[in-house]
Structure formats: structure tokens, C-alpha cells
Image 1 (cartoon, rainbow, N blue to C red):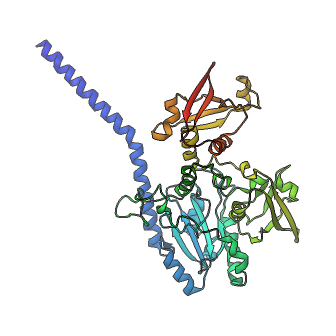
Image 2: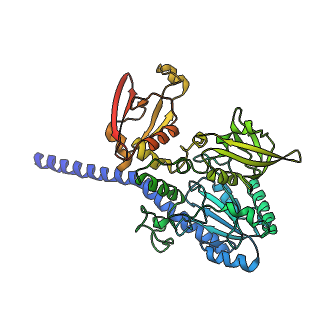
Length: 455
């Protein structure tokens, strides 16, 4: 009897334990399931709300073009990654026609597109790491300008604002009123013809995506995000076994890379000039209003970035500014390696670059006080492992033995001080897929050599 009761008890304990493990597993998966469901709800909810309102033409550029031709109005085309929180406030203000822009929006044919599927990559070239970007166009698809800048993973107050967008809208209307007399000056607003016509034709996307979203099925899984276009462009270069060019690696450089800090509440007005920068040497002053750069009229910081995107590795850009009501001509010199002063670590596409070069590591520069504690000088490499990738190709470093809080002090014996962004760039431009590197790390009092292969 006692043995039977004991056996029953053990069976009961085993049953309870299995149930507990199952419950823990469900709880662990719930956040991921919840997140996926939330994204579905957001995308479907956006369509229902915005399309139902009837003001915005939703995911239908051809209809927008036809209406612009009929009405003689300019086009406003907004690309928005709905689940992304970055620029959410500006997006809401624009889509709901905030009083600050309502009258201006009425003068445009407004189109909202929430996917990159089917995007004409020769027509719509912009910083694909953005979650919100706008184009101002003529019905014949001549581009008046772009709006939308990003330089941080979440914060947008230094990059965009409703006030700045309003002024860009006004500037686009002025250019539209002058059209087609100014068409020649706008030619450079369109970039070179893309080798890939639409995103779903990239080698990494073929067979996975269609030209439209699947609202009848899993709509989020059917969506090509804009940042995926940026990843695909870099994969094309990486797959060719050649160094990734600065133009591809540092797309749409922020003017800060040249010492120009622009006011997000204006079109292209200088808020501050960094000391000893290219902008200071060119003679820019705080308060200058950039009217043209390289001959192109400017409506926003994004328009400045467009000119910088097309600029050569070295050279001079002619700028026209208004200072105290007077026009001045300035020459901005681009020194070799100028793009490399831009920071790419905030970009969503940087995660794939970390996979290629760092085996999935997320690194941060070691603070000066910690450097002192660890007896590491300021003129040597000191990058702390903030996160170690856990899955698939992002777990190469994990399998090589890296741990959170390891401090990288040398790569292939080189101790040169670099930021994470600089290290990623160096590896992409000096190493090829399958090349091996050896990283020296400090772990407590230990010094370890951890080799792994590039991807």
C-alpha cells in the first residue's frame, strides 16, 4: 500500500513538473507571440483607420499619380514602417493632418505607402534605414525634394519636426509653382538607374516576397521593410567578394560628419558649426540658410544628405547661403575619408553588418573611468561586449567563446583605438567572407585569444 502511494506520489510529482515546464515555456514564448500579434494589429489597424478616413491614397501610387495629373497638384508620397516607433509622433501628426500642416496638405495629392514591396528603386532612392520618409514630386515624377532624417535608434527630435516638415511642404509648393521652368535644376534630384528594379528582385528576396502585401494572410511576414532594402544592397556587394564601398557602407551621410549641425525645425538652416571641421573651414556660420548645395535647391536636411550621398570621395561642393539677408557663395571641401566620420551603429542594417564582421557582437566604447580602472590607455582599442548574439549566423561569436562584458583590446594583433562603427567598416573593407580573424579580449584578469571566421 505504502509503495503504491509512493509511486502514485512520484507520478503526480512528474505530472506537475511537466505541467510547470510547459507553463514556463508558454510564458517565455508569450512575449514573442504577443509582439507578432501586435505588429499584425498595427499594420491592419493602420490600413483600416487611414484608408477609412478617405483622405490619403493608401498603398496605391498609380492612383495618386493620376489624381495629381488631373488636379495639377504636386504629389506627397510618404513611406512608413508602421510597427516602428521611431518618428511615430511626426507620422501621427501628418497622417491626422495636424492644424500646423492641414492647409498645406490640402494642396497636395497625398499618398501613404507602408511597404517597400514593388518600390521603384530608380525613382525612390533615400536612406532606407528610416522608418518615415517623404517625397515631394510633380505628377511626371520629377522630384522637388525629400524629407526625413534619422541619426539615432529611437530619438528623432534632432532630426525631424512638424515645423520643419511644414516648411518643406511650403518650399515644395514654391518649386511646383515654378515648374517646368526649373526642371533642369531638379534633374539631379533623381539618382542613377538601379540595377535592381524592385526590392523583391534582390537575390536574397527572390521567391520570398511579392509585389504587394498579403492582407488575406500574414501581412507582416509578406512585407519588405525599407531597412531590408539597405541590407540587400550591402549583401550584393559582400557576395561579390569585394570591399563594400564607403558610399554603400555610409549611406546618406549626416551633415554632422562635415561639422554642419542643422536645425530640424527649419528647412536647411545651420544651428551650429563644429570647431575645426570642414564646415568651419568653408566659412559656414550659425544662422546661415542653405539655399542650394551643388546647384540643387534644398527643402530639408534630407536634401542635404542626398547631395552628400552622390558626392565623390574627394572634391568640392558649392553652397549658396543667405546670411543676414545677403547671399554668399561657399566652397565645402571633401577630404579623403570624409564619409567615415559618420556613425552607422544606430542603423537597423548594422545588425547584419555585425553578423558579417563581429559574429553577432554588439560593442560599446569603454568609458574613460573604466579604462583607467583596467589600466587601458586612451590610444588603444577598448570595446566592451554589450550583447552576444544567440541564434543562427548571429551566434558565431558565442560559439567562439565570447561572453558579455568581455573587452576587445586587439584584432589580429592591432591595438589601434576604434569605435564599433570604425571596426565594422575596417573589417568589411579589409576582410572577405570566410577570412579568419583573431580577437584578443580581457575577461577579468585573463587575456584570451578568440578566433572566428568572417561571414
